[in-house]
Length: 561
Picture 1 (cartoon, rainbow, N blue to C red):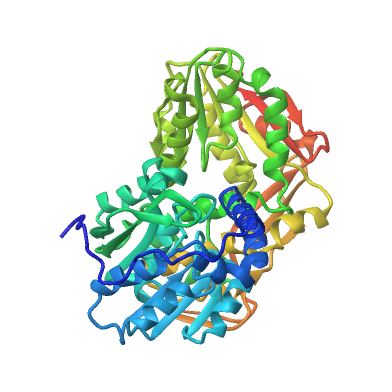
Picture 2 (tube, rainbow, N blue to C red):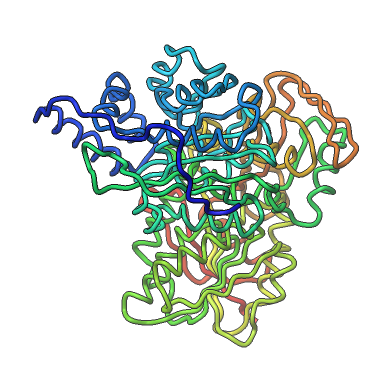
C-alpha cells in the first residue's frame, strides 16, 4: 500500500480560539517568526527555552492538532500498542506522547534539543525516559534498531531539523518499524532544507517504503489558515548500505589486536557521510581555527591563487566550503571551469557535487572521483593543465614525515609543466591554542569518537561512544628531516573499561580505563620548514600565503623537472 489517502478516525476539527487579543497575536507572530528564521542550534535552544511555559497553551490557541493526527496515523500501522517502544523525536513538551498514550502506547521515549521543553514533558509523566540530544548528529545513547517506531511533529519544518535527521531516525528504528511525521505542504514542495530529496533518496535506496500520506489539513488554523500540512508514514525496510572501503577490517584488526598501549588507526578510516557532517560542526566550533584561517587566505587571494588554470582538482573534498572561494573567482567574471573532487566518502562527494551545482550551475563542470588517494592519483589527467589543492592541513594527517614525502612524490609524478600544487599546512603555535582545537569541546569529541561508531556499525562491536573522552597530546617529533616538526596526536580514551567482541573480526577486545585510541595525527611545521618538506619530495616551492595571525599557510609547489 503506497500513498493512501486516509480518513482519520479522530475529530480533527480545529479547536475554537480564545477571544482575540492583539497582544497575544503579536506575541505568537513574533514566536513563529523567530522559529522560522532560526539558523543554528543555539537559536533553537534560545527560542524553546523562552517558549516552554506557554507552548501547549499557544498551540491550543491556534488550533494545532498535528500531534493527534500523527499519533492516529502511526497507530494504524502498529499492531501492539502496549508493547511497542516509540521514539518521540523532537518531543517538545510531550504533546505527541500524550496523543500516543491515549491510544494505548506505554513505552515512550522523548528526545529533544531543549532541556526546558523536556522538563514540561516530564511533568506529564507519560514518557519512560527523556533525553536532551541533537537528532541531526549520532545519538549515542541508543543503538541501532532500538525502537519499534518514531513520531516527529513539527520537526521537519522551516528553521528546524535538517534532512540528515531522517538518517538518524531510521538508524534507531528497526526494520519493519514505522516512522510518522508532519510536514507543511509548501516545505515539501520547495524541497526546503533538502528534506524532500532525502526522503526520495531513502526510498530509492530501499531504506523505507511509504505507507500513508494524509490529505492536506490546515496547519495553524487560527493563525495562518492558508498554511497546510500532511502526515507521512513510512515502513523501515532495510539497513544502510555500508560506506566502507576495502581494507577497513584489516586496519582495525591491526590496531585493536596489537600489543601497543595506544591503539593507532589511520585517520582516513573515520570518513563517511556522518563523519562529514560531524566534521563540519566541529570546524564551526569556537576553538577550531584552521578553517577560518584558511578561508581568510582564500577570500583574499583566490584570484591570484587560481590564475588561468581550467581544471581544479581537490584531494579530500569533504565539503565544498573552501573550494567555492576558488570557483567563485572564475565564475563571477563570467568564466567556466572544470572541478574534480576526490574523496574516499561517496556521501561527501555527492554533497560536494550538489553544493557546487546549486551554487554555480553549468559554469562549473564537476568530475567526481571516489577512492583512496593511492588508488585515484594515477587517474589524474596528464594532458590538461591543472591546479591541485590539498586543503585543511590534510597533508599533516599522514602518519610520518617519510609517509608525507612519499605521498608528495606520488603527486609530483602527476604534475607536468604548467601544473601547480597548493597545500594547506598548519603552523606550530602556542600549545594552549592547539589544545582548544583538538582537546576540548563536544563537537571535537564526537567527531573523533566517530571512529568507534564505525567499528560498531560495520564490524559489529559494542563500544560505548559516550564513555570516551579527549586525551589528545602535542609534542615535537624526532626525525632526520632538515626542519623541525610537531605532532598533535588525536586521541580518545574510555573513562571506564570497554570489553567487546568485534564480531566481524572474531576478535575479543579489552580497553582499560584511560587507554588511548588514536584516530589520527595533525603535524605542524614552522613556516620556513615547508619549502624543505617539498624539496625532500623533489618539489619546488614558488609562492606562499598566510593568514593575518600567521597561524596557517597555503604553499604553492611545482615539479621543477
